[in-house]
Length: 153
View 1 (cartoon, rainbow, N blue to C red):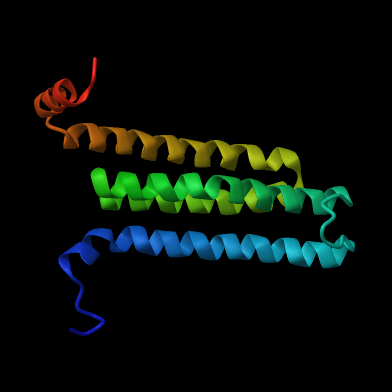
View 2 (view 1 turned 135 degrees about the horizontal axis):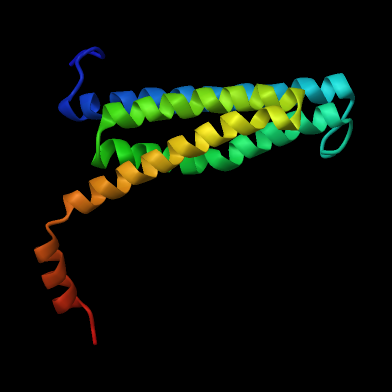
């Protein structure tokens, strides 16, 4: 089997995998920006305080990193249980809004707000897709029967 021959499972997740790799590369880019800002503003590790310009770069990267695990989990759940293409599209919009957020925040705290709201909306949409997909997955009558038999009252 060649590298170019995708299995059925791979074709069902390739878009999610591509968005995941792009997200990892974006996180690496943000981390590199903190390294450059440390050099530019002379803030040695482990210090996180310095000029306001450095602190905005540092906080932008930290905030993006804090949300990254949530993004990854919900991207995959929404893509697997609802629709890969829609989830990947929302994921791309999320990554783009985080890029704009990062660069806006490095200029001023105020410039982070609109892209922050857009990225939050993308997360909520993917959460909604995940819930709809998971709920639709279960045959509810069978779930109720399982609960009746497995729950100790």
